[in-house]
Length: 76
Image (cartoon, rainbow, N blue to C red; front, side, top):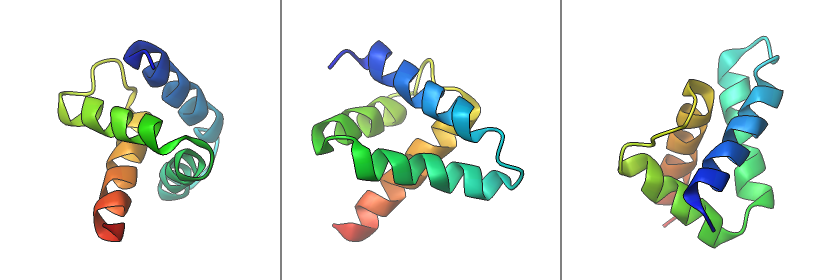
């Protein structure tokens, strides 16, 4: 899938959860959404994009993908 599209999707999800008063809960909620609803290949691609600099990812989205990456590493 196009990485610009994936980045925009993560940003949209992050914008939804940005209203969460507790920042850590917002980050965890975005990461959990990606874990539950995104195909493993999409998750892998967005994590690789983050490791390559994460161009286009907004701050909350970037933190959530970092959390997702750490969860993926811990599960491996």
